[in-house]
Length: 199
Image (cartoon, rainbow, N blue to C red; front, side):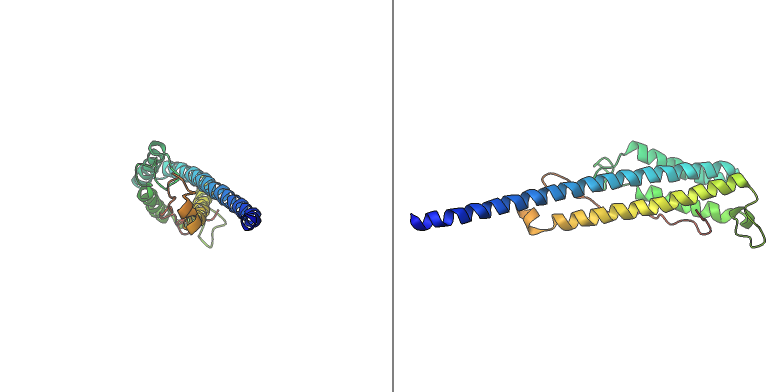
C-alpha cells in the first residue's frame, strides 16, 4: 500500500499533464479548422470580385471579345452562388470546388486582355497612359482583383497545409481529436494575372 500511495501523486500529475496537452491540441486544431474556413470565405469573396471586374471589362469590349469573357464570368458567379464552399475544399461538401470554371475565367481574361490594343493597356512606350480612362480604371481594378485572388488562395492553402500537418500527428489520430471535421483540401486553379496588367 505504501508503494502504491507513493506512485499515486505521480500518476495524477501525469494524467493532468496529458489532459492539458490533449485539451491544448484540440483547441489548436479547432483554431486551424476555423482559419481554413475564414481563409476559404476570403478566397470566395475575392473570386466573386474578380468575376465582377471581368464582367465590367467585358461590357467595355467589342461584342466578339466581350461575350466570351462575360459568359466565363457569369459561369464563375453562378458556380459560386450555387455551391457554397465547405471546409473540406469542396462546394457544399457534395461536389468538387469549381476550379475549372475559375481557370476558364482566367484563360478568358488572358485572351481578352491580349486582344486589347497596346495603347489601351498602357504599354505603348510613346503613350503616357491608356487612351480610354474608363478602360484603364477597369483594368487597374481587374489587376488588383487578380492579385488578391492569388494572395487569398495562398493564405488558404497555407492554412490547409498547417491543418493537415496537425491532423497527421499520431496523438491527433489516435485520440481522434479531429472528430467528424472533414479533411480540408487545397484549392487548385489557374489564377495567373494577364500579362501587362498593373494594379
